[in-house]
Image 1 (cartoon, rainbow, N blue to C red):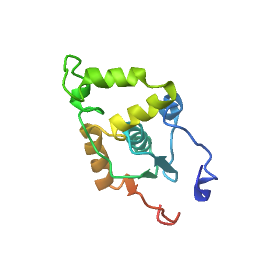
Image 2: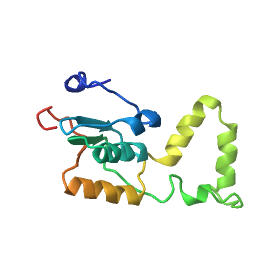
Image 3: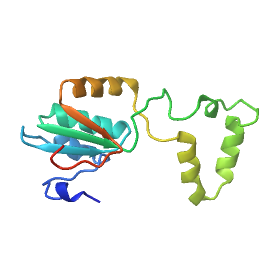
Length: 144
């Protein structure tokens, strides 16, 4: 669903369409809205700023966070046999019906993360005014 103030935007692209994102060029009067809080959103916002957008707005439900891995490290040690070990979790996952596996993975991941390198790039872009980041806010089009 696109907020009414952005409904007239000539181009709407999902971050999984990397070819379209790669080929977009922006003018100094263009405003780009990026919705999301993970790596793809960070990359899309940075790309729009780099490609000349006059204003880039990144909106996320929560503060951007970083972790080295999207899963806890104990998920990756297949030789572990302790309670809550990777072997046990893998067994539970494979035994779950397909429709439950997505929720299983979402719970294990705990939400989207952005590598520290990209958080640093976003911070630099924010500091120089190239990107505005709104967290869990509804803003008036005049603010954007």
